[in-house]
Amino acid sequence: MIADLPPKSYRSTAKKRRLVVGTLSLLLCIEVACALFTSPYLRVSDVVVKGLADLSPQEIDLTQKTAAKLLRHNWFIAPTHSVRQALHHLPWVRSVHIVRHFPHTLRLVIGLRQPFCRLVVGSTTYEMDDEGVPIRLARSSLPPLPTIHLPQEAIVCGRPLEDIEIGALLTILKQSRIENHPAIADVEVDSERNICLNMSDGMRVLFGQAEEIEQKIALLNRIYELQPNVAQLLSVVNLTCPSHPAAIPRLAYLKATSQPEASSPSHSIPSPPRNERSKIQG
Image (cartoon, rainbow, N blue to C red):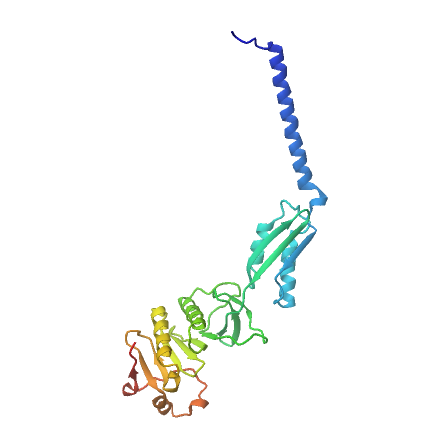
């Protein structure tokens, strides 16, 4: 038995009713969206910035001015992406996390770059983080940190140094903090990009070019493991070729330089006579 179909006029009326209801629903959604995106009540009126405690007043002011670009924008469509990028361009900013608090507050948590070492270029000293990014000119209140001396080159705060030597130096400094041997007082890179470590116990370590760094670090650690007081015996250790390390005994070095050890502030390493070099067994 075939069910009776509703009259054609009834089907047409139902279709029109659905069309009207759908149109009204769409208009309602548009109206609600317009209200949400244009309502003065939903404008950002409070931007809270956290994590600026270690900055100078000038750096705090510049960071807050950058974050203030979020004010008076609608809470839903505030330009958080562009402001986050602008904050990342500040040399001392490492990360930015933005949290929304309905209906008109944005909370910014700033992660700061922490000084990992001093970077000396010419007569200028910078603070540099563990990613090789110069942060700012070194502050007088900076705690003791290892120092890296580089040949003269252009330094832009906030822009990472991409020299292969920088990556090697950072690896050496990071490794020295976890190994059981004296800290590295400072590191020098000469015009030929040779690396020299000046250890806090007075011994100097020649690393040569920025290659085979892991092997050289492992060998240096092995030396201190076998002889923790090696600086009393050796003045210079040459690890330029890890497979054939060499050293200069401290007494021979003092004779070659013809000056007392305590009065020698220079970091340059004179070339010793061949018969004064002693080989280190790895």
